[in-house]
Amino acid sequence: MKEAPYKSASFICYFCVIWNRLTIRFTAKTLEAILNALVAHYGWKELGERIRINCFISDPSIKSSLKFLRKTPWARKKVEDLYVSTPSLFVQL
Image 1 (cartoon, helix red, strand yellow):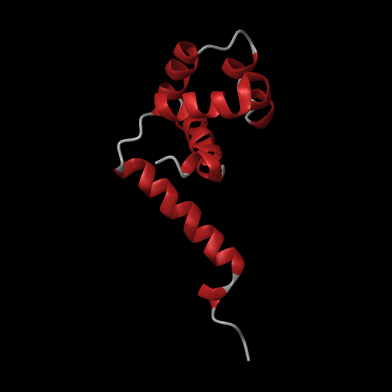
Image 2 (spheres, rainbow, N blue to C red):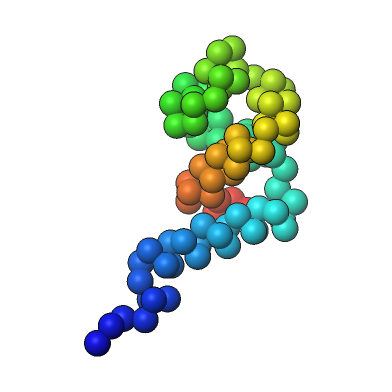
């Protein structure tokens, strides 16, 4: 007997990621708040290792990173994905 697809661990994990991403959009969590939480949790060095973006590696600052992330959708998505996949941060919503 096959297990229902919605009971598999990968489906549940995928559902959680999608739900969390939607929750970010609808709770008005600002990009600045997300970035500050990630920097506080990981620090600039580890953040730059996890997401290879120059604004996290070379002379990083919140202001320059926000400017870049607001203009670059793919980079913003990577930051939001990291935030969503870090349960200890996402619980703070």
